[in-house]
Image (cartoon, rainbow, N blue to C red; front, side, top):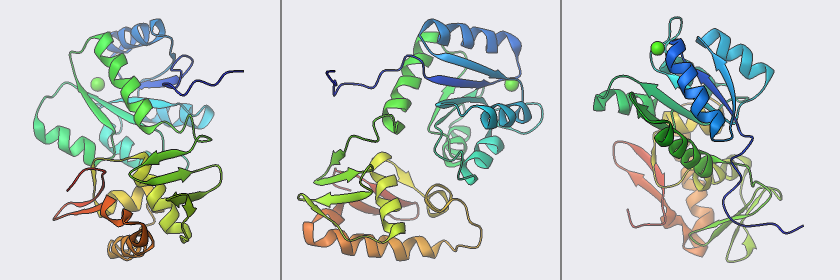
Length: 240
Ligand code: CA
């Protein structure tokens, strides 16, 4: 069988739509099914949690305004749970304000789409997020900035040689490499890499960043881990 190294196939990906307004829910479901996605529907956060436990979706579309728990709070809860923290989330909202957008992204959403939107735009955004976050090809090494992430082998190589990393440094660099080019605050990193253990202090992140940089230093790859003053850290192949 020939394996194509192109974009992962989106067909059959399972999207859970969490939206209380039936008309929007149906419209979204129709558009997504036509694009080849499998679609699950939930009218509130409680129903969403039940469905996620039943069948883990590949991506969640979560409306900001839900009747029980807000979409933002639901996203935060999912990010705190090790079982669900890797599921990509796109937030739907009627509000266009910049502040809500920032709050949504800080709460753990991977992207944000403002109503009204076309089915075409929605599908394009979903495909972009799935490509960006997708572990769909976890068996294939991911190479960027001189580093190679070999998730199947649970190791990272620099210049072809495996780095000696502690388990936390490995998880940290694996997270960065699969979520590059954006700033992550210390608390976001705690949620996503440590699993939201409330007993871990934020400065712990700095300690592990230092260790990771030290391990990357001989290959010159420590420059990939950028400090963004007052905000957090970013993995980037571009100059900070
Ligand atoms: Ca709503």
